[in-house]
Image 1: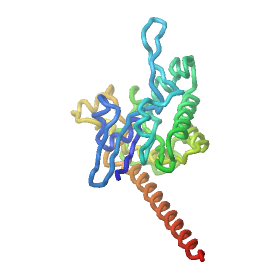
Image 2: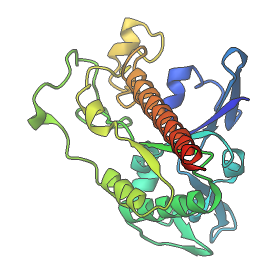
Image 3: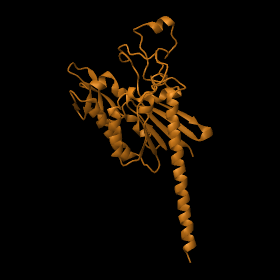
Image 4: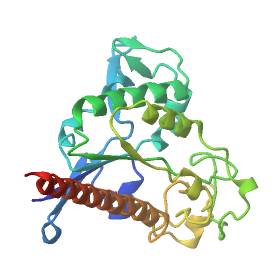
Length: 280
């Protein structure tokens, strides 16, 4: 018996496992731990729904996002023992956040669609797929919320910085407002038939403005680090660091589920014994 774990990620969790280099050429990576009878596959899916193309007025193809179709690799993980889903950061990028001629349902491409509504539609498509295709008696489903970023003075491509941060936020009044996308996610999860374990890491990561790679995401000279045009990474995380906590939360939830199954099995055995004792 081998436990099969599928982790469907954007580009957050993969950095913890040293997978960044494989995504350029592959959309999934399978690792087997035979000593533990465990197989883990990482499936890259930034939006959980399908990236698409349609012809524009000039006869060229333009990128769209199909809010009504789950991404094509979904068949890979519907029979897994454990599935961990995640999407969030890619919905904050310029194209997705503006929502101009990008979101699509059927053959209709929206001229203008608010990103929050698009996110709701995409998650609803994902939720319907989970309810229709995943057997909760076999598969445990998790959803990890997205983590906070800490760009100061701009965004990643407009001079945003975090390299001077050396301490976490200690006063809650300086935390960002709770993301509306996470409220959308929580609303969708409440309407699902399939039990989904929500790993809400959004607020706890907001404290760690000091934990991003910033200018140290790769080997650079002092001159390169001082370059004002150099992009800083204030959305991903140093390792060891914050993402280790996400794994601890997941591991804790798995231990709880294991204990619950043990208790349930003991109760079933107890009831069987009681029935046998009552027989003449």
